[in-house]
Length: 124
Image (cartoon, rainbow, N blue to C red; front, side, top):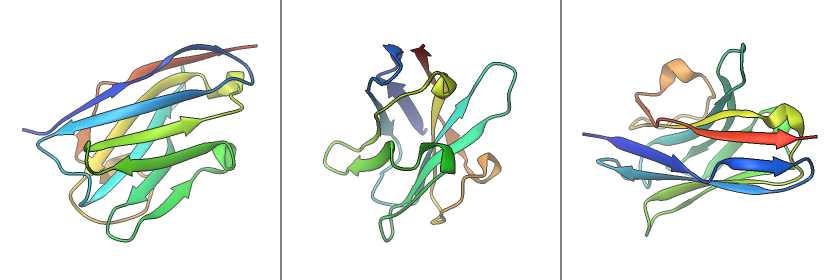
C-alpha cells in the first residue's frame, strides 16, 4: 500500500518561508513522477510543481516560479517543496502526489497516489 504523508504546513506572514515535506511508504521517489498541488477554498486543485525522477526535470506553475523549489532526497525517500517570499494567495491545502510512470505534467488526473494534505496559511 502506498502512503504519502505531508508535513510542514502552518501559518506564516507574507514574505516568509516554509518547507513542506512528503514522506512515502510503498513508493520509492527515485522512480516515477512527483508533484505538489494546492487547493484554495472554493477553488479547484492547482498543480504547483512537478519532478520527473527519471531525468530530474522539474516544472512550476507561473505563479510560483522563482519562489518555490521542488527536490527529492532519495536516501530519506522524501520530497520537499521549499517556499520563499510567500504571498496571501499561496494560502491553501497543499497535497503531494506521486505516480509510478514518468511524466512532467501538472494534471491531477495523471497521479495515482495522494497524501492527505497540509494547510498553508499566509497572512497579509
